[in-house]
Amino acid sequence: MLENVVQLKCCVKHDPWGKKGKDSLAGHLWAQTPGSTGIVDSETYSEMWMGTYPSVPARLLSTGETLENYLKRKPELVGGSIKERFRTSLPFLPKILSFDKALPLQIHPDKRLAEQLNLTHPDQFADPNHKPEIAVALSNFELFAGFKPLTDIEWLMQIKPLDQFVPAHATFDDELLRKICKILLQLPPETVAETITQLLTLPEAHFGKQRYIPGLLDRLRKQYSESDNGTLVAVLLMNYITLGPGEAVCVPTDSIHAYLRGDILECMARSDNILATGFCPRPTRNNVEIFARALSFKPHNPEEAILGRKKTDKGELGRTDEYAPPFSEFNVLATILGAGEEEKHRPIEGPSIVVVTKGNGEMAVAGKKKFDLHEGAVFYVGGNVPVEFSTQRGMAVYRPYAE
Ligand SMILES: [Zn+2]
Image (tube, rainbow, N blue to C red; front, side):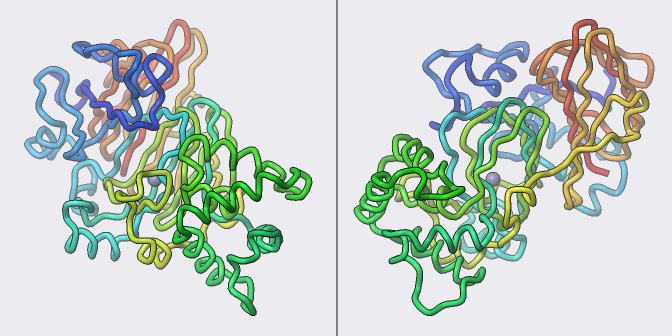
């Protein structure tokens, strides 16, 4: 057995906002693993996790051993200075998500707050790490990310009945925005419902360039009842963004976001810490005070949320793009091949995960051993291994890595 390239068997989650049955890409990819139990039409398939996080661990297909344990036994397969720098073999956690309903309105706390929460509430915050993340669209992708520009929010909040939620005689700056966000999150259910109903009586034109507002309010109240505070925060204060396949967003630590519809590849620092205050049952919501205090104001317009991709010399034949967010835990390579095309990846110093999201082909390792690739095939590839991809009919391969 080649030790530095191993095929993985991943787990899938069934959150209620996941797409159902065969409509879910996460479910479809998960179900292609040899030995999988297959898709049930009535079941939701929300997330397939491809990392070493203990609650949803990936395992070696051949033996069932967790990847975490395997890399602990064979630290030489990780490569680079990863272990010293991140105190873990795989510093990132890749996932495939499929959803047609809003995910919880959330932020991921920074390291300082995560350490505190992990210490005081280890049951809810299972690790002391931060969780900056990126999301690459695999289909059309709708989301809320970051706050709108202050001028847009200020203009909107003058409209009745919203004006009552703006503290009087204050300068309209980020600190005021923090207060407004907190006020909206703390409104009693009846007030939320009343406000949404009143806004829906206004004509679209009343909202100026934000005329999408009534449509989104109506959509979200149907998903999460009329009294979910998340609806007001997302639609009134946050950037509503639509992306096509291949486009991506970057969500730094403490940045507010709520994904709305799509199939995405998500990659994040190895953490599962989340503070959620909307689009989830009231009893499970986190403390609004802590949430509001932690909020950052980046991004502060839709353009700032976008993560660009660029060609990288990691792909020797020029068919590889790279998403490089401004954090050190990972970058993501995307190799999208047409029929009959191939690509060679230069050796990467650290660990990586290879996942095929579309099509099929082959992966040759170090010019020798060949692996069949098909939709849903997931591999761990260790440090310093050159790999080559080839396909007869076309194939999309994503490869998050650290080095
Ligand atoms: Zn998130």
